[in-house]
Length: 506
Image (tube, rainbow, N blue to C red):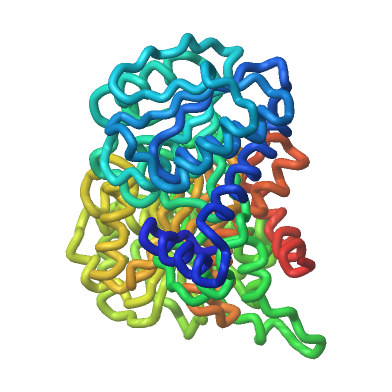
């Protein structure tokens, strides 16, 4: 699914209007969708307090308020028209239609100069239709006070399109207390970039989208920089297996993983790769890992390095279709030197995870030798060690765009909505996953899955997008059995094959 910017959505709306759908019709569709969801979620014994601005977001709110009123809900509306007679055409028309529906004039407070804040309690439901995506700067003055009062009221808040005070694109100057904190955000037609940024996603609460019939042709034609990866997207990329094949047809991979006390990471990565369908897997680790790997992952070949406790050499004995380095290898000086030597001599894309990234952070010159189109899989802490501390998630994502472009790599920035950042600046947010996956070894399983997909001939970009989704769905499947507290990395690895089956069956 495409995630459009403010200007791109405006262009799609204009194309829809050129196709014969009026601006008022679009407001009616949006307002009806918002009202329908509110009526599904809340009973009539609640009091509904609408805050509407002078623009199209306010028009949506007034339309929804009218429909709730017509269906017997207890509604009060505050319409901010602080400049006087400056309502947009759509908002003015929705005000007219609201009053024409016998809505009491005394329950419509139109604010031109002064404003008395209504008393809000947890019994009320606040509907935020102040500014929506029309806002391009932080809230100011009395609107900051209004946002803080709403936030402190403990009343549930439904935001129309996006919480007021938040931009649908980037929010470099936003202050959380000056943004209305929504319990539910009803996005009109599309999700927005802000939903996927940890710094702001909590302020959106749960978000859902409603389809108001914008031009499908315009949506398909307008390119986007941001995307949400869904199951159907991954289903189109995975190839079914043919009848007359053997393990040679599904590639060979080697994973350099583990050190003394960290062999579990090697086991998790190996299990992830095997469950993701690699034809032949080799794990290279210190001698201390021999018995562990041979007894826990007997399907994998073992290549030892000449050291009892650490990886001190990274020298593939023959050609592999995929190479991954990092899970549990530690940051010993000899390991850093081995990684440095390997990167200086290898040119095909590889997967770098966990301690491989920490090793590079200790010797940043290695960044210049990472093969182009390699996959880097940092979580926030590893990213900041690698590319410098970032003040928030938005700054980190912007830095990831810069670094992916500069080093010509794919960066998988792991988190709730794991982001795959391409070297051309496009970002793909993953829609699968669960908090149950916040467990040791989960990232190692992802490394194994990525290795397996590359070994099977998938381009690193496709491997990144599909691998992250498969990994997240495997976590969801594991949670169905083990619960949100009980999922382990082994459960995620074991569910990987089931995740692929579920995707391909779609």
